[in-house]
Image (cartoon, rainbow over all chains, first blue to last red; front, side, top):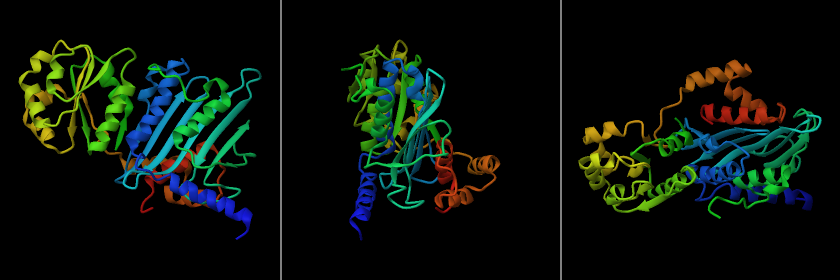
Length: 175
Length: 177
């Protein structure tokens, strides 16, 4: 195995370990996200009711999907697939879409955790990766590989990337 | 099943005197208690109590009743429910799924009737109609969830937000993954 290949393989292994944790119950993961949405609401960046927009769906025993859509000037979408029995975050997508105030050019920023390796391989298509771009998605959208990030950390990164004032930790009403 | 934090938000926000949250195991009770604190309306005090008597004492705070004797708490609340009428924020009783407290509540018809619609049970919500959801998926994509996932996993579909969300949906609906 070449040195370059082993970097990507080690990164993939680190992500596979990170996605399983005793703290990865549906309610605990949901709470980490609700806490951030509450902070956004506290900054008047979304509706105070948005904390109630997290839907959890399950068909197979133990498999859960958390979903939330928040729309203000930008649209935030969070979708997480979980295996509660294994305390595993199987996959997730955290995405922001918006439009520039001048010119109206659309932009997107998204972090995806894939359930399994797919596409070209762990370098070009890392298990956990970011997409950033302007205009229509999918035309040219290279994937920037990332180390393990909890979905809430991914949300922090996206928010701080598009709005420097949102560098975590967010101020909370209690602090 | 499908359940939303909006159900709990509504219980905590509307003028409810008593509500019940069901939890499947002790560790989840703590996480749900934290969720109550997160979803509580701005400015509303939230307190934790291990004695059911707190429900009759602190009428303006959301009082989480995290008691050991859940059946006893249900009995007390049933006998003294008239004393809860002037609460301005809910007392929230946590009951173990299929535990003695829930059993007692089933027997306390008047109390059970009173709290109907004020229960939050994230692990035992209404089932999703899988066949209808699969039909919707085929209607939207022209493919079954399994066929769509095969193409997605081979990298044949554009890596867009829409398709990533479609992928999450397909995995939820996939048969024998």
